Length: 242
Length: 308
Image 1 (tube, rainbow over the protein chains, first blue to last red):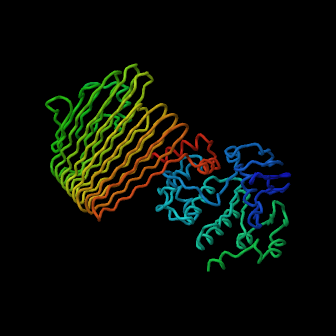
Image 2: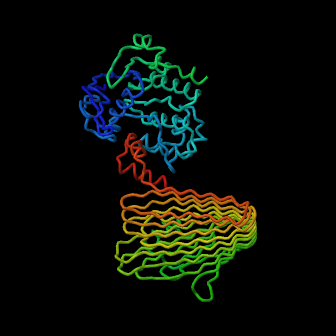
């Protein structure tokens, strides 16, 4: 279980201190699919980065499975079983998709194991496994590889920061299928997704709406989704793309 | 063949991936003298009359054969310049593995300068691998100043892999090439310097024949207080295409000067250069750390991948 207590984060901007996250407390139960939505600049991505240790809190505590991880660095949190999929995946000259999957798995994978993760995210494994994770890959391809690294890590807590950003409709449909599969597996894994896509919100157990660094709504999908549908907090990517 | 000791064996593994005497044609040179040689029906190796190098002749139509000519120096204070000429006749397809390993535990400088000239016949394909490696904890320097000269006849292809990853204190390498019609030259250089090392690498490739092409990609890493100067030049004097890419990572107090240059002397010459120098991107480190690596492990993975 993940618990955040009185979490705050502020940053310097043009000499002024700006509060990005303002005294938030939340509990994320095991085996739940939680979507955090809200307007741009409301603090969604920041909260995800604070949990993974990519940003450091300015106040409050983060407790993961009973351990206070507030002062742990990214590596230590990753080793406890926290995975983070970036909104804009990073490119590496020279590192191949297979290298990245091996690093993610923390062991030497067989080629067929590596290929399985790629097949999971809808990539033709033999075309991609030896490719470099460089600028020759499209945004959608990178995004799927990013998700494959999370699958290879088999984490207890998986955080996806706007996974739909920069991907095509086909990849988006595939993404929904991957989330459904991850959720239905018996791994007791908690998934936190930062997104305002209606179809991702629709498969959530719980929805949190964040604005101006504060929680403005929180509850089950059945309660929250009808309240926000059609607003900027729950938009329809398929309509936008078609 | 004379016995080789453990240090020489290790050096041979590093520079030529040799665990034993190679198959096919070879000439092994250790501490200033030839210690083993083999020729085949198609590949002849002769010492130069002056005694300062070898002539390697590869007969017309030789295919799927290899030549290994590694050099190892394991005694401190040896300084030598060796002239090796490769005469590759028409229609060959051959692998040539060169390279030099220096182990210097003494206080005198050890230096090997390999001057390699290639005369590649029509429609021949050569794959050339040259690795340089240094080890030993003496105060004497390990110095390598190779010169490679390539003359390519019509329709020939040469792929060169030049690698210097570790332990060479000072290097000043020069590679020049001239290409006739439809000849194709591909160069992949990987260079890493550390400590107080200095490396200079200069390429000058002249595309003289219509349809000729060159693709030179140099990837390098400068760590600690090391310095590199990379000078990549392509001259296009025909309907040709040329591409140079110089991609470098700097770490610590490392310094790099990249000087890519292009000269077009023909309206149909299409030449491109790219050069980039920078430190490891913070987001790359962050990504690998979210996969469970420490910062130092992440750095190592990024460098290994970059120089692979």
